[in-house]
Length: 306
Image (tube, rainbow, N blue to C red; front, side, top):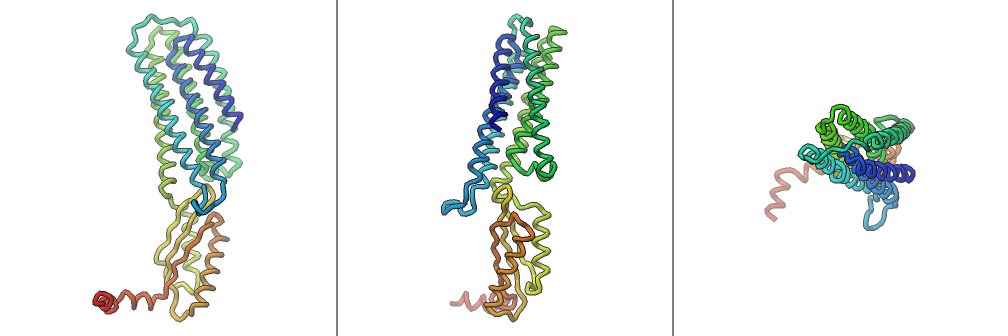
């Protein structure tokens, strides 16, 4: 990721110089896009480092959600530094009445061509990493890797839009083509930022484990001979590969306290083997007859009268 950060910084500087020399709004929009990508690389490096810290007294469930927090900041960076600046460049180009100088556009297109090759190579490398981690369904669970893929994909598309806009501007002499390319780049970045931010928000506020894992846990609980019924099952992702599981179950009648404790320990171990990411497991076990007696109108009346 340090190599990607260095490459993004070099590309950002090249685009910025080319954009200033050529006076190209599309190239300047792409420079802002690369600056946002560079800042996001810093965020993702922080996410990878901080999320690996072990649990402590202040954070007993660990620091796994750090990945989601820094991914949210990356989405904000894409929106503010990339999307908003691109919109500004596009609308300014549409309303500007200054004399156009296209002499630097050839150099600008060369810069974009080199950037396209670099961004394309980075995208291929990111997709290869996704494949190594089990394909799109598994690899893109990692918010850091998901953000890198989104950045590289939008970078390739953004550079292509900028090149098309600049080329059409040179051929037709109409700045509207390049301004439209800048606005399109801005719209693309805002959309990507919205999608990444929404996913990070869902994970930060407590997203449930995937339905397949929840289904396996529920099936395991219902298969236990000592469990009469599963009253509730709650799951929550606490990190990339960790989850909290809490279940409320009714036991069959006639079990003594020692047997209940033995059953609870066995069930927790079974859940941990079945769903390895379930590193925090809590069981609320009750005896159905005892619970029904406690919830009966007579018992409720006695408590109320007392």
